Image 1 (tube, rainbow, N blue to C red):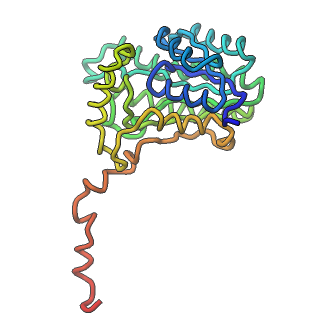
Image 2: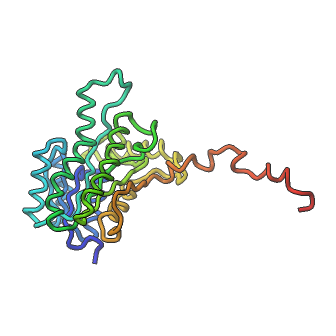
Image 3: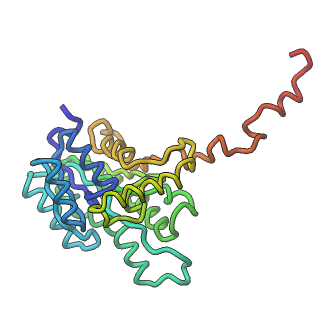
Length: 283
């Protein structure tokens, strides 16, 4: 018996990175999964690899008609939706605000924040009717601390955290849970700057290797994060193991937000030499 036996899950941005790792984990735990992504060919290939319990569908998560169609497709195929993982995203606009085009601002918010609203909006009627469900939104450590990521990315992810909390309050009376997962530095093709290079496995792996080298040691748990680290938390939030957890932003960052690695702290913090100065003689 898997932790997700009998459950139906929709994963946006499911063709690669965190989404793909989560799709694999969900299937291993017994779920039926609809992989949703703009990269239809990559999503279909992954679905084929994972077996008959998985299907793929192209979707632009910033378009309401596309999101509504995805939810209807999942219900038509499997009769219900138990888990929605609002995971699709990208880096968004970067650079100084006075050099950022309004169109780039709008696109960033559409993909990173509006898409989460649309997912919640169109899955809620199905989950409310069955009086059960788990909605999981991908936020980020950038929601809590400035300077980790792009400005507008951070603003959008902070919005995702608050949308998670408000939606959790609204939907709790229908026994529908809403939580967010907040990754730290994670080695994914998107983070490595190769989101569309899945067919170039060697170059993608080289890019991931460079990313791991750059991020290793940035957090107290020295290794860089992997997509599977996030998939583990998402699986917990999707399962009945988290039946009394809602409205939470679960940080998975190797200790990044906790503070600097111990090895990088000044000696006056990590050593005991100062207290020795005041220790009574003979003690």
